Amino acid sequence: MHSLISASPISSLFEPYASHTALPSSPAPFSLRFCGLRREVLQLSQPKYRVVSGSLKKTGNYVTAASSGSNGSPLKSFDYDLVIIGAGVGGHGAALHAVEKGLKTAIIEGDVIGGTCVNRGCVPSKALLAVSGRMRELQDEHHMKALGIQVSGAGYNRQAVADHASNLASKIRNNLTNSLTALGVDILTGFGSILGPQKVKYGKDNVITAKDIIIATGSVPFVPKGIEVDGKTVVTSDHALKLEFVPEWIAIVGSGYIGLEFSDVYTALGSEVTFIEALDQLMPGFDPEIGKLAQRVLINPRKIDYHTGVFASKITPAKNGKPVIIELIDAKTKEQKETLEIDAALIATGRAPFTKGLGLENINVETQRGFVPVDERMRVIDAKGNLVPHLYCIGDANGKLMLAHAASAQGISVVEQVSGKDHVLNHLSVPAACFTHPEISMVGLTEPQAKEKAKKEKFKISVAKTSFKANTKALAENEGEGLAKLIYRPDTGEILGVHILGLHAADLIHEASNAMALGMRIQDLKFAVHAHPTLSEVLDELFKSAQVNVEERKPVAV
Image (cartoon, rainbow, N blue to C red):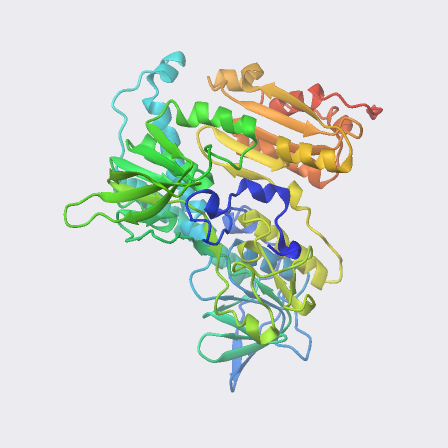
């Protein structure tokens, strides 16, 4: 990948498709992003803006804005201050921040508001995982008895589970739409494309102008060559989230985040799972120590087997009474290994950027492996290496970090820039999580990445660890299986990476990620106070156990 759009070190956590299943000649975009919805979407507080309904007046083929109020007023020479192509989590976050900055804003969506995250990704998947977590707990007789609880015959209704996921997606989608409307953001329906500098077309023949434009078109499931998807027995995550049936035996192609989360769902609902992974180990993007623990906790005790070091060179859906057929070849020699006959297959090989048809050729921009090239400020770069004025690209479409909340953060960063304040997002401080039971989370570098950086820049690193077995709250929940790991510089106290596997790891990681974003050092964090007994004390003990060779800041008595 071009150096200007190369992923930051955390991007290796979201493995290329080729590392899972695709043959070496196949493109290698990154894997599924995760949700970062703004507070307004969940309607946790009323926005501090006057509610104004936006309207449009059409003159010929040009649409001009007629709304006013909290959405600002555009410069006289443009219809809008800002137009965003794509109303996913990234576009939504950018739009809300633009309104806060007083920019007249429009957002274009050719599908449904909410994009992948809300409709076909992190939101419905969390609904399924909520069910799998409760089923797993109720089915664990030893765990229940240890708490003094007697439970018998836990079961589920497949359609009711599917409805729970669908209803949640609908609710969040409606809330997101309402939040945009309430703030006066104009929602323009139709596929958006760029006609030229500061000019966008949407729908059949509608044309608008904007001082600045953000591309936020997201991604779609990637299916490697040789795999036939029928949406019934061979599916992508888009289909699997509908939970139209629960197979007795399902193969999951790819052992990254998507595959791991679905294995948690399927095994809790009674399926047997077989992982197919191209690399020599499962979960290759995790910190190796966390990966080993995850395999011991999330794979080995469950009805899961796996094939590593192999490609799924061909997958044929079930038809005419025959099962799904998967042909495996050696990832290195390409020799035929074996053939599996199973009930279903989930292609969990990540996602590809959705950038075709955007009209990028009209501004001399060439995608690289489908990604729109950008610099560290999300400014789009043309084929000659020059910045395209007033054009930005955020989220999955630029490939820097395929996480929904990263897209939102990038969008907010862009709005800061177009509002006159320079801002560069530190991608190393963006956390990620896998919502298995127990959860996995991380921020920053893995230990091998930190060692490589230390060798190159000539400094030493240290590692601190703490176990959930030493945490009172975790023991009270009878959930002592877990580990937190801190990678840092002992000479400065800089946090290089934090990795957690354990109860509510996805929530715990934010203390570390925010500390990294704010530039806080371990010697300062040692004085932070945590309520007792809470899981947050896992991080408290982790920071206190780190040995830094700098003078610690003295606490201030009040």
